[in-house]
Picture 1: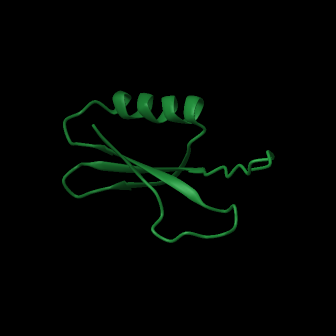
Picture 2: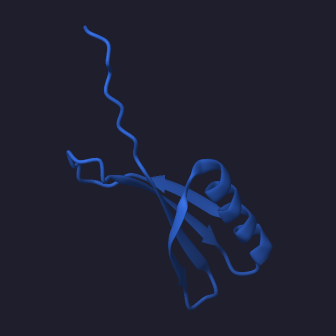
Picture 3: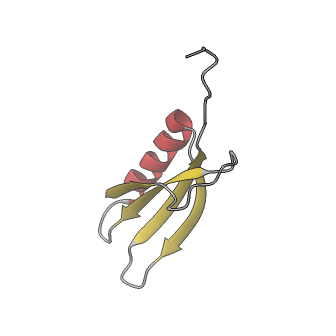
Length: 77
């Protein structure tokens, strides 16, 4: 199983930005491992499943996303 974390290429000023996590499950790997990884990320990391794709060879790709929280400092400089 392969996990890749990516961020969008464009920087937006609004708080609608997301970061993405792509989990790839290769053919021959048990499905319960992918389900366990998805559940772990959803429960502990506040990720949500955005898209699932099954490829011709039997591999699956799962795209998860979560909102990027921007925090402004309230302390004076």
